Every structure is written in C-alpha cells, then in structure tokens.
Length: 106
Image (tube, rainbow, N blue to C red; front, top):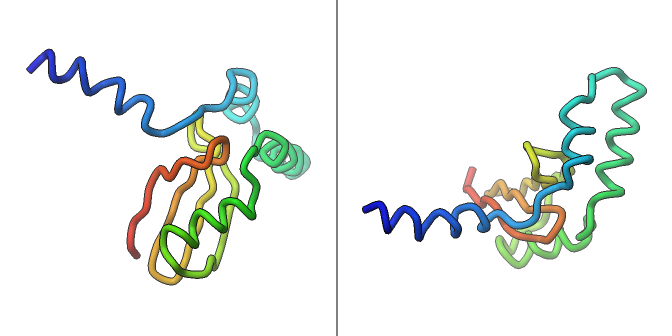
C-alpha cells in the first residue's frame, strides 16, 4: 500500500500543470482588497497569463462543444486559472499552460 501511494503522489502533484512563481504568489496572497489595488491585481493577472482568452475559449469549445457564457481570470492558491461557464458546464483551465483542471456539469 505504501508503495502504491509513493508511486501515485507524483501524478497527483504534477497533474494540475504550472504554478505561479513565488513572487507572484506572495503578491496575490498579501493583497488587501482596496479599490486601487484591485486594478493593479487585474493588470498583473493578465501580465502573467500565458495562454490568453482566445486560447481559453478554444479549449472550452473543444472540450464542451458549447459557446462560452462567462470567462474570469483569477487565482487559486498558487494557480492562475480561468473560470469558464457555458450553458451546461463549468470549466477551470490553468492560465499558465492550458491544462484543464476541472470540468463539471451544472
């Protein structure tokens, strides 16, 4: 059993794709939610994003064959993610490398 757990752990750890750098993570984790800093946070999110909204749209379209209703770039812990909603699905995509983290039906 221990051997199985030791063999499966790397697959779980690396399945989510790239993570943000330490400096970016510290920037977003320490941000207070004042209005002027929210604009800076949004600009920095888009500066770090490597796949872009068009690629996120196309990944979602391939995955669900539905049009995107809403798309939001945000962070979750050390991950920069796109939260995408279609008519029947919610999809979460890693914004650094395009890995699909989660796909669930509504």
